[in-house]
Image 1 (cartoon, helix red, strand yellow):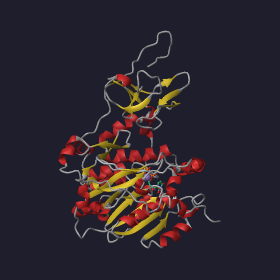
Image 2 (image 1 turned 30 degrees about the vertical axis):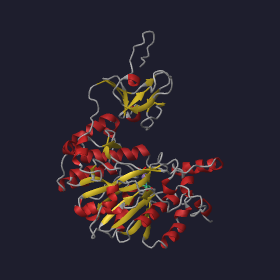
Image 3 (image 1 turned 120 degrees about the vertical axis):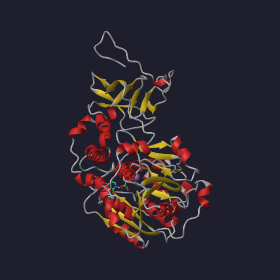
Image 4 (image 1 turned 30 degrees about the horizontal axis):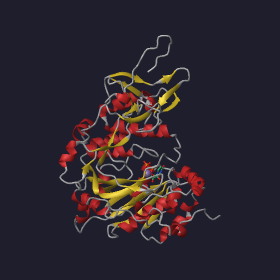
Length: 481
Ligand code: UDP
Ligand code: MN
């Protein structure tokens, strides 16, 4: 059977959908088709399929980036892209944007690792992909016979690498002109520099391209990755807008590392499954074991941050992520792991497998403590309020439902969900300022005059719409806030 896909769509090409990073508007007649494709990938595949695999992007980097000079002997790189059930157009646009915008002397090979994509519904990733990449010459495809998850899939790709530098990208990226040299130059200066591009946003809704700048990676005490603006000390340390930004953590999908250094610091924790936590593990390990993790402002790469994950977690999403995060906490965080466990008390009994090899690695590399990392690298870390009026869930006793952040962040509606008593998205702190805080955002009535949904918004610490009074109701056994 012929696969149901069209790698090129000439009549749409003529319309220049998405050129120069523009957003794509879905005409009403295609709404149904685009909704169906959306649920497959959790991004607007209809839009992506109409954008040229060679679409142009604006270069909005600081002007100084275009004047930079680089050594002639930069080390060449191999690119590793892992994917599971990726859409054809996003995968191939990643490949073509790299081929179109990298000096061929510096980008030696592109290794695609198919992490056992399902055949049904993704037929194009089988023989058609093999045929297509043949003509691209430097692209190689390897396949996992069994689903491994992104961590072991990347390790599989690493085994094929023949260049001194490895660049990892997700399978739904687009690079901006000049992206590669600044990364390689920084690694060339010092092999223990691990570098990330500025990660621009390709909208999951319409594939519009927007620039990001001036942020760095951190984490919160649920061990979730977060972006934050630069603290004053980091702004002062940098002499120019194009100086590297020291980043306490990396987002994970897009970075470059010297192959030898990757080996020296222990590759990845290959006991981590499917997705999540490996970025923090790598970040803590780099800093604590003597390396340097940076974001390079002259290197820009866009990434589709999708709405949610489209793929399965064979052992369950919670189970998998918890185990990965526990491995991070147990190996790298010393006593600070208790702040994480206090938020998820049930995890203390949850098994995380054997970590002896990673503990041994930490000893062998004579890595510094987590306390050192917090005091020297993530200096703007915020500790959870140790003093609070109440902590727990906010339950409606007659329905057994609790307020739940549903994993959503700022400006999302607050949800309700059956109470599960396990903290996480239902853990709420009634702060000494009488705010209701969940995962660093505050419940906000948004307007005191207009009655409406309560949303989650950044905590402004100014009371007003974020002040919640707790009153005892005398004629009822229920307490209300
Ligand atoms: N991926 C994979 N195997 C998996 C899960 C993910 O190869 O079991 C790939 C996925 O196709 C993507 C990369 O790993 O290219 C990162 O995953 P994703 O984009 O879902 O992560 P996010 O960017 O949302 O953090
Ligand atoms: Mn991704």
